[in-house]
Length: 84
Image (tube, rainbow, N blue to C red; front, side):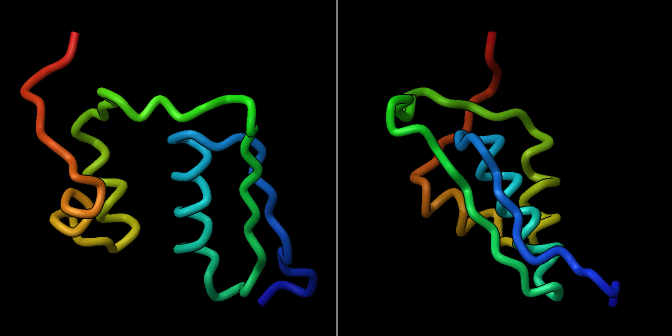
């Protein structure tokens, strides 16, 4: 354990990237017992419609040790065969 371990992490900006960063920090730094805070703008709304990801998201889900089927059910996700 480092002498001065990280105690607080602040992520400025939400969206997909912010929340993925927060999830990754929470999973991989859990032994450090640090506080993670995500700050989002109230002025920038969620898109929420027709958002899509690409296949490597599965690697990220597995990296977090989360069940892929649970994620799809929880977010009411669908599968696309392609995007343009």
